[in-house]
Image (cartoon, rainbow, N blue to C red):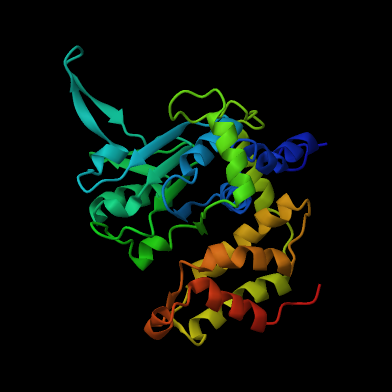
Length: 324
């Protein structure tokens, strides 16, 4: 039986199995996998912070294999130009005409590695594509084919030679995700799997089965956007965001986009939990990845070693949730 978006139950079940499927290739990063899938189903983008070598490229490649989508990777460097992302006009000697050579941004899943290594002008070329779902090349506009998910990474350790994203650009990312070292048992399983019969340092996504096609993702996103939402849930999301603007220790709080993002991600969480309605717990699951990059802590708290998550957990504890 199909709903108004044309989806049947087997397709919905395949979408919910996506998380388990990615775990076959990406070992020990269950929370990160879950949050990236939340962003995909919410039609948003992800900023990932973590040291190199924890499987970010493998995660995006595996996701692309699972949804049969196209994949591109851009290594951001200080000399990277906007045209290296979006593309450029070139002269074709054979036809004696100018033609457009599209850049790597024309894909379904894009890994923007170390986005803070390039200056603001280059960052803006990607951020325009993220926000507008289109690219401008020499005055001509080219739409990007949905789905379009950007997973941008930052290295939290090395700050020399970087160009930190300003708050207005951070706000373009639906989620900020932390990727950490796996626990010992997961690391042993991962090392065993990666080194068994593999030559060199190639990424193996052969264990991933294609569960969905790329053209099914927008239909899933439309289905999730129609999930029921009680007025009390909307009130709770808005109260959390408004409280964050005045909370002790928060110097700058999130804008209305924070409330909207909370509800978008909460809908995707409800879908993954096989519900057609949103609960306060869905808002709480979404709160940390949605809000941690939308607040700025007071200087004295940063000096004392507090993180955004510490303050947000305090906020979640003290702002009353509606009774279910």
